[in-house]
Amino acid sequence: MVAGTDRVCVVGGGPAGLALARSLKFHNVPFDIYERHNDVGGLWDQSNPGSPVYNSAHFISSKTQSHYLDHAMPESYPDYPSNKQIHAYMQSFADAYGLRQHIRFNTGVESAVRIGDKWNVTLSTGETKIYGAIICATGTNWHPSMPSYPGNFTGEMRHASTYRAMDEFKGKRVLIIGAGNSGCDIACDAAQSADKAFISMRRGYHFLPKHIFGIPADVFAHEGPHLPMWLTQRVFGVMLRVLNGDLTRLGLQKPDHRLFESHPILNTQLLHFLAHGDIAAKRDVARFDGKIVHFVDGTSEEIDLVLCATGFKWNIPYVAREDFSWKGGKPDLYMNLFSRETPNLYALGYMETNGGAYKLFDEMADLITQAIIARAKGGAAKEKVDEMIAKDRPDLSGGIKFVASDRHATYVEIDAYRRHMKKLRKVLGWSDVTDGSFERMRVTA
Image 1 (cartoon, rainbow, N blue to C red):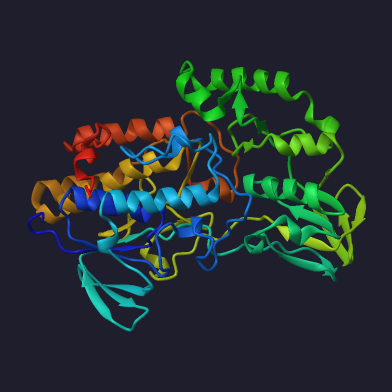
Image 2 (cartoon, rainbow, N blue to C red):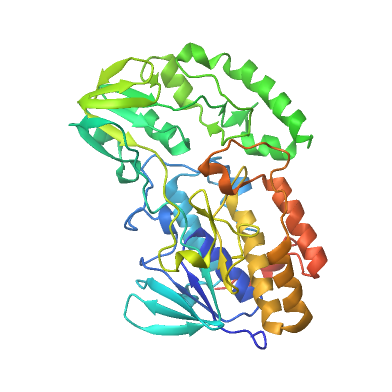
């Protein structure tokens, strides 16, 4: 145990919570994790109430770019693992590093109230406990955001988080609203199962194939030459025009932004189904009239089921809203980790980026852990961390001018983010965890 370090409360046993568990254990920081469900994995466990994961869901980053440090995914996994494989991987990770013993399952955190320099945590069991720090790791995909349109729709309308299997589309005329990666995946299911399928998009998007010259797209980007962002945008833009052609021929809109300025769609199948007429692209919804959906371009369709793949509200309901500052409906955190307003309040998993998350989670969890240790030491170490969190305003865009939308309020370019993490470690004199250090923690049978 690190001398002087109060016990830490981690909320959530999903992907972020597990990265924190290993980091805190590695540094001998005392901690407890509370998970409201009966197993690890968070949203990747479909039995977890509220999980938005549908049967056909796969990772949108490839297995070699997505795993935790020192814990590769099995060689037998495909390039893009399924949701069941990801959940099994989460379970194997928890077992490999002896993390389950630190997790209290079937126990949620109802509230965490700051009293002085401590946190009074109330559990779903009615118990209260005192902690020196709290880390929010409950994720962003639990509170569905539904759109509102003029008129009244008399068919079935629900959020995509309720969707599980393509059989739900049989015998129906289906409209998917939203063109994020999940929306496009579900639209592909509808294209194969519905009587008639449509996807409504507010704007045009850039479509990246999952493989480029037979290599997973993110591996191709990672292992290829690292060019300045402006040149990367041009090179990949030309490549996509060669590979995909003019997407307006498929009824899609021309993007109103350059490549990478909004989250690109990593999907090959949707273009296939559009080209074969199994699904049709529509503009944004203008209004409803019974079962008739009118679109902004003046066209209309009769629809039985509207499925809204319109994202989620980023809520952290167990802490007071004023404990964080908010921007675009999202917590505005230093390095997407540290509350500037409330000492000893941290969060992991409240960001979007253009790369695999879990290796990054390891590095981010380590920053949180080392900040907790430095603050526990007090004196110059604490002052240095506090000053950094209060005053540092890094540019994490990597030279990308992200689309001005709420979704991109917390978006970072992964290479720029990693460069600044490296700079922080150097300034603060902290160690690096990317050198195989976790291997010695493995639990042996």
